[in-house]
Length: 181
Image (tube, rainbow, N blue to C red; front, side, top):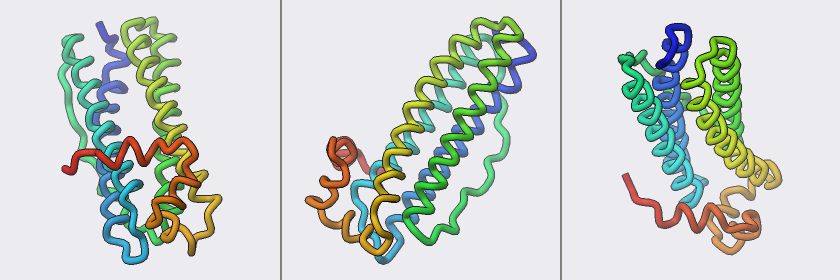
């Protein structure tokens, strides 16, 4: 059973992950709308990240439901849309992921202090997932930082050049076949 002390904090994660999903969706739309950037691979990566955040929100809801707690949603703020470069997009994505990791780390600490072991186990699993996602987005940010801004569009349009900046070919293989929404 989730302690009363942890209930509202964990419930806030539902809205937080929905906010992240909306942010990633907005970033994807910006990339598709930007005239000098053709980014099939990265756009699909952002689409997949958005879907994963929605699924994470659902996991938090299911955890709350299994433990007999109601779910309340707060209004999600409007996503940021004043990007001017691809680098700003991924800098912002890394910032969002860092906020998520820090928030869940604090919740793990709170659950330990409250001796709420049900929440602690769930939050530790969630933290592990969020750390992985943070590293994934940070890797893309690193690729973008290493590329001069005026060459980024060329890099993304040219599959061969794209592969040079992604040695594991991870994003191309995982997101080129991603379902369209």
